[in-house]
Image 1 (spheres, rainbow, N blue to C red):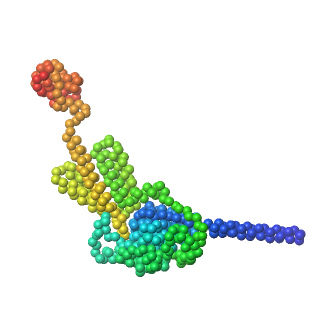
Image 2: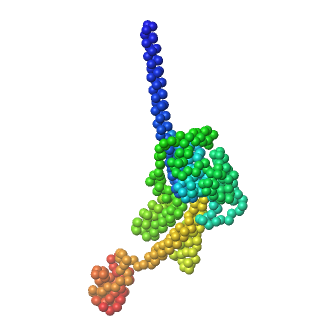
Image 3: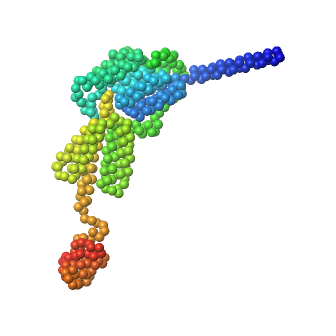
Length: 451
């Protein structure tokens, strides 16, 4: 019995040792894998900050978290963009369990306006030589045209923007006072000025140089925790936009949205005024649905939509009534104002450009008036199909019209066809007759002249 117990004890100890050794080996293998090849997820910002770009960045940050990446590297070259999209990106960066580095590159690139806000929100803010950032003042414009607003409203917009910036820039260790000058005074900074002013952390000549400088660096996360980056020999996984995101990112551009809206309206208008053409209706319907999708995402101003609708009405009235161009001019002005007011954004201009508004409005006005005049003119055209086409046509009597009473009956030949006809006057055989009206299968005629 004692021997059996001792044997069981030895087996138990051996089993525990095997499990312990296996666990140590697994941890060592895991450590070797993680330590030998750190994982960096790379995302690219190379245009305006808009909803589809925000969706792409947020999805990339989520994927990096799922893969337990060591770092998310966002390369940036942007003039700015929509404030709503900017705020979504910043909130996702601040909540990311994976450290985030935003790197302005290559040389000549910028992180302006909304890009400046995003740059300062990162765990690591980096720039390459020959780049700049800042110029983050709210642009009080309407389609590129400066607006005169009262001081109270201007202060409210500036205070809101600076408060948002202070909310995270200080925690990141940035110089908040200097950062505010980019918003209040529209100041911009080169990479040297930015790193000297403690707005960014690193100036790196390339991505590999950046990762080399960050290897072994201790960073303080937004939640107060501290993380040491191990990036030696890191493998970089670049996540590009999907075909869907690339396509949708074009649609939500304000200029493209306006063009889609106008082409959609014009196509449907052409189909309704000229039924059966089909192609304008198909193209117009597709463009209108795409415009409605963009309208759902973009911050669309309802007043701009109403001004575009008013312009369409004025163009139609111009075709109906003689206004010596007054209605057409009013429609053009209305559509231009509608285009410039169509997209609203408190931090960037983010609206339809004046050049695109002019390039679309004038042709739209001409085509709308032209199509409406064709419709009005067609109402006065003579019927060209059916029996009604015979009215006013001339033919020849193939027999003498006779019979009692006032109505004289006979037959005539019109367009090579024989018709029964009646006349209120005698008609000799071979005489020329003119059709007055059609009554069933009988034509009412009169003498048109000698044969």
